[in-house]
Image (cartoon, rainbow, N blue to C red; front, side, top):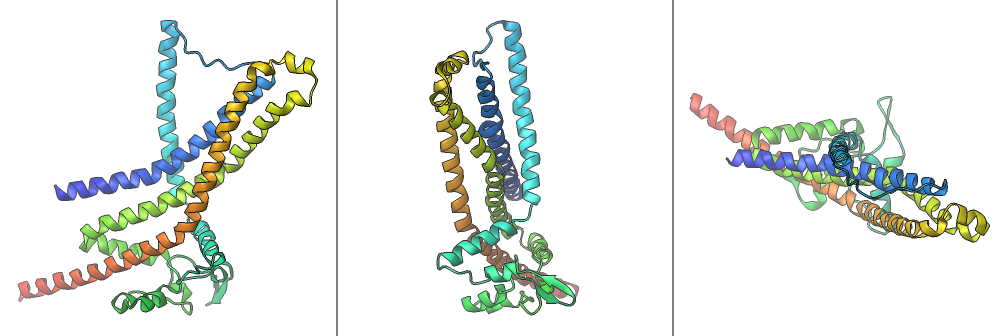
Length: 302
């Protein structure tokens, strides 16, 4: 029962880590750009968008089916988009976070913007510093975790050994020998990916929401710069409330997106280093348990 609950919790966390950024991406694209832009353009062309629900039973059934189909498509597209965001490397966000920390006098202990920007030639190949960071071993020494330092075999002198593959191998050992710790590790990784996916979703759609905001503002101000005859001909007086509401919604969305993006940049690198530290700690316990299991097996065979 405990294993079932643990696996169920991991599944929920991973699902949310994929679905939430995907829903944010599709939602911002639809409700922050596509729908309001279409409505503004229709109003500018002299048409109107009806928001009244049909009363005829036949059309009510059709509308209900369309709503259910739209919700299902939104869920599917959100998962697909979220999965693509999850597969996208968060190194760009990590670089931005490290740069923000150094700019604000709180430099990282494991890397620097110079290391992440400038390539180092080694064995005929060029390397840039990235997760799991060339200076992570030195960081462990500063913390006094010599027992963890032995697992980190890479430095800035051996950048070819620094790769995500090694960390993924650690996670495999953790899942095999310490499944209880594997749940915590997976949870931490899901939160990191959630932050990365949210940042990518906002970054991808911010220009579209901004373009909608500019068009809505222009539509609201047009009556003051154009002739009143043209203004009356396309019913701007009736549409002014719509533009004002849409402008307020777009403004709130832009402020919320900017706030979320800024705070994710501020916190992401610390969160990622914390994830790596947790994985290294769990790997140490997995090795200890592996040795214990092998020792018990040897005694049993004897």
